[in-house]
Image (cartoon, rainbow, N blue to C red; front, side, top):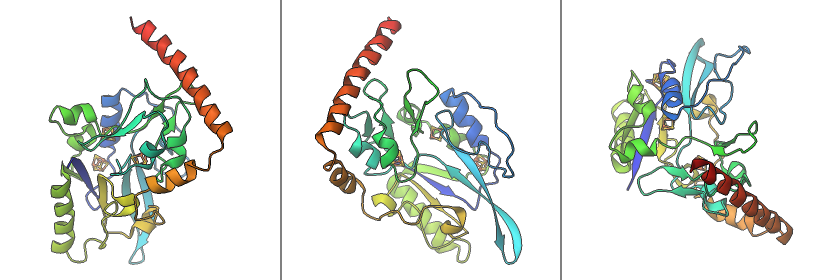
Length: 256
Ligand code: SF4
Ligand code: SF4
Ligand code: SF4
């Protein structure tokens, strides 16, 4: 069935330990940022930032309050990014993570366009760029460990386990705490279901979640769109495959 994570937004204190832990585990560099009137830092996810906490100021019972929302790949059950990749560089594993293979990627960036949550990022600043995104710490979970961000969280905001156990926990928390949560498990149905889900005490629309995501899985839509791509564009893909072949061959020769 695969692993899943429930993010309980009522527990998050915005400490950002998960952000730091993700950076450390994945050996991503920190980029210099500037305050821009918002405490979300960095302001956007990037090829060096697979997760971040959004700081959202809103009103509750006439008083200003903060909410904190952790952002990362949701590891969709039927991922649009996987369905559009022409060379199989993205793959949904039976353990839950949507994995990316550098050696197969041709840099077409269809995955970035297809993802309904705007997750994959590109290394625009590099001469030989790759796509980057949260890996669900697949090496760690294959070794029986929790994802790095889950492990470090001091408030147990993230509940990790088998998908059916995580779903049951989400339903139990909502049922046993009337008035604490809105009656919505974000990710249960969105995009056909996602491995990472959220529960919240604040309506998701007030926290900036996308509410217009179809309930059906997205690959059927993406294939329908791809079938309209003219032969010329497919020729470009063939060219990208050739470029990637030489790029990847160069890398493997450097590795020797
Ligand atoms: S959230 Fe986006 S990048 Fe992640 S699995 Fe779903 S479609 Fe792919
Ligand atoms: S699962 Fe791993 S890669 Fe994904 S956000 Fe958490 S620490 Fe980062
Ligand atoms: S470590 Fe936990 S409490 Fe701290 S910001 Fe991340 S999810 Fe929130």
